[in-house]
Image (cartoon, rainbow over all chains, first blue to last red):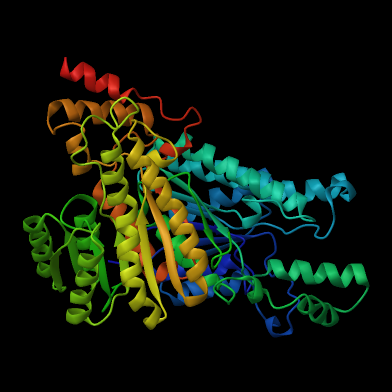
Length: 280
Length: 275
């Protein structure tokens, strides 16, 4: 029997071609789960020319179906409570239950801007999505889990930025530290229902969050995206800073997520696991 | 199978968590070198491993004896030709008189327990690393203890050694990442194993203790099982953790989360059982 046979999962932030949400959703389907995929953007913009033609959520559902399972595409802004409740209701309607939530939806927000220079709006835009969004989706899904909690799993995607501060990324780090507080509290509150809550803290990954950085360089310097990509590369290949000497792959986050939603981790809760190729 | 054609050394593999880890690995296609001082039980574990169709040997070894450790690793290499995984699970407080608090601890006991729990894993790791470096890959797993950071009973030597393991593992992970050798640590919470035998004999009293401890200290309201540790050990030994190193995973039913720290009065409970 496959690891996630007969399970139903919700994965948020799942529409980007090179994002970790897509990798997780497809991996879960390959392991036997039906998967509802959420994203604020049905077809997110990408800065990479080779992503042209990517169909976003719809294509992820096709990949889920190619694995022989059912998918459900739900364009949802996780910072909007009513939208979150509606998406969870639609998932329940289609699949009858939710065994697994992996919440990966988030934004990188302003970078290279010290907190003293950050506007209220910039701060709130990141906290709203990354922290309030995590609260809203966790709450909505946990409510469906509680009546029959045993074996159900919540995984929140944090960040290395949720384990230490990075100058110039104050709103992002604050939001991700907030996710840690949310996850650790939720883990204790849901332990009595035998629901596990854990966090994954990625570092050293080349996902769509890197797009935000490139877009930002393009905007602030008034240069094209192609020029911004070259500019970003000048800071040196990221693998220079990673002890393993290479970037991580979204599939490797999917591997860790699989462990955290499998039967092998039933006594692990409230934990944050850093997956960063030796960065710490 | 997650560990097909791999070879693992599991120290303290005769019983408890080490046995559960050995069997979990075997189910995933891994050959196992069961290292323990208790040779009869190590043989029994090796036999159980072989029943799953995997290969196993039992090697009686005192891990605090460097020469014996080198001989053990040489035997493993001779029989299996490679070592992919090392689980530094052997350790404990067996033989400790009293609990090892500041009233009862002695210099001799300090040396003995720290040797077993810190120097032993150091010696085994060094002997195995020689071969992993040649393979240019490997997975090393240490087993620390919740008591190293959040003690529920005072065993000074043991918890100091287990805190030492955390530092040793972090440094080793840092050093070996460029060589593609993964080093991670499992921190077990309250697990029902033979570890407790020297502190409290099995029986109704211990069952009552476990129940009370779990209710008060563990958010998931149950003691952990050796299999719970084996699940984490499988993840850390397998390809599922290929981008994870230098990490500490608590397998403790949520226990480390408690903001008040451990407040269960273990010694008081033991005294009430004895009187």
